[in-house]
Image (cartoon, rainbow, N blue to C red; front, side, top):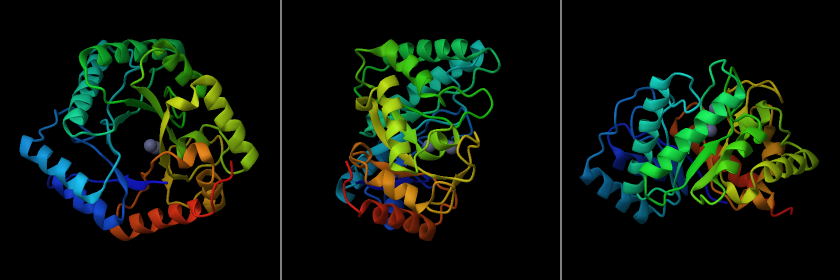
Length: 284
Ligand SMILES: [Zn+2]
Ligand SMILES: [Zn+2]
């Protein structure tokens, strides 16, 4: 199982490679611009070169680009929807230049207009994004916790979106363990995990599952709380992660940590815990 974490890019992209190595990552995820702003990515060609070389030398692979937090592809506001689409395309273009393996994005919120309207907005945005971006970089839709009017907490919602892109191999999904658990999907027991993955397979298809965001959860099962916790310190717990890490469908995927703290020691510790969880071997 390849394990890594989300890495800050302050001071330049090349620094992210050093930070990932320092933490013992096999794989990593980065933002390519300030995640809380709409400003375009200002990465220079020489940064791109250094980043690509650094990743290659360090054996960091795959590398994921996470879109900015402001993106709302389900927004009822035409202005927000348009800006979100542009930001998404910008992230897809940057990912292609960085030789990144995939872009991960949240879908956003329907703002009270209803699930169906939100899903239709997402489909419209993705269609446009794939048309505008010719690169073969996959785009992964992340499962959400379901707080507020967010779209993507129910696998059926993701399925309604992926179902509209049957021949589009670039479209995939990312399972965030904290989000799925908070959305009501049991992951901590072999039977619960089996049911959860069967639901994902039925609605979306497991072949579209390309990434795990490994986060423990402060909130309980079905709490709809998007509050990440360090591995083993939340409601999922070490035993829950051991069960997930021994699952054949999940352990073949890269696992990226997005736990709070972001100190080197804590990141190393979280990575160590995931490796320990995976050390038990293959269950199925
Ligand atoms: Zn996540
Ligand atoms: Zn989250």
